[in-house]
Image (cartoon, rainbow, N blue to C red; front, side, top):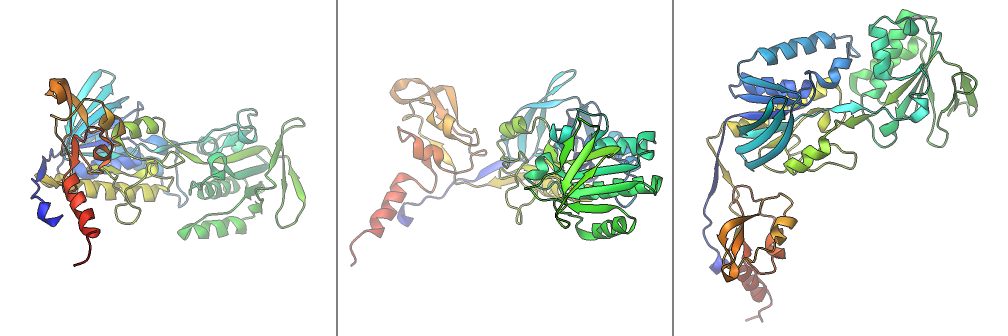
Length: 436
């Protein structure tokens, strides 16, 4: 095989030193601002009519920091930066090109817009689940943690005047995966309610409390303040009744018997879901998602904010549910990785790519259908086998060298550089050649 190897021509992609950030939440805002402060033009695309994402519903964190003030300052910095263009009410319609030289079509309220950029950062965020579990939507005193946040911050007498509050953890997606922030938010709200009315009885029904890191101290403080935590298991989930007023019954794991509550407020700690449109965006960018719909990085240790395709990055809740400080950290990391690529004038890409012998191509579309990266296309002007018009074409800068098209091509019109048929056959023959 070594005798048949050839020097492969370099595959180079010139870098357009501009970035596209998809998503205008805390992650997208931080990533855009970080890149702009390093001197790179950034276009920020947000599908909603306002920036801020899920953080617009949060006023203070567990430590008491003013999140609303932080978000206002962050948005002001982004909107006033000369290198950042913000497109509100806009969505990505199509994208193409090669690493360092992407082109993306964006649908804005004013019409279509085509952008040229070198990198893409996906920061589409997430949303609170609002399923029908435990009677949500069937009774005015059954609400989610975000609903309770609005009541507390708005000074609503319904929150201040409650005598008994029950919170149920791990609701909705929480039965399948941990959203990381639900326990901290429940502890925060329980302590806020206790501060408003020390005589209020507050019960948190949990499967497992995950107040990780330094959040453990707030869990301890909540217990010291008289907030009661009652554990339940999956075989004995809390039961909510609406026939005789609002009631909650749960079998306590420690006492081994059922306990019945008549709460003034029933608060559900709903899990977090990926933002709307994540599936469509994943299909456009040809990037993977996990079984729960969140985007998946190339490697959790070696490339934690990179997608497998070069030039695409991710951060924030689009990747997985996480606390605000973790969102900011990951956004800065994604911006740093993107800046490393933008700082280069050209990218030297992997030369092990598929090439088409158009004289053998019959235009059967097998390569077009099978490619996971949507790279092959039919050039209608190219002359194929038998002098037909229309033959496959593969852009070397976009090809990942996976070899699927070469393996499936029925006409053997596609070869993978460095792994051509004659090279592999020579290797196999040498392996099975008689000794001596």
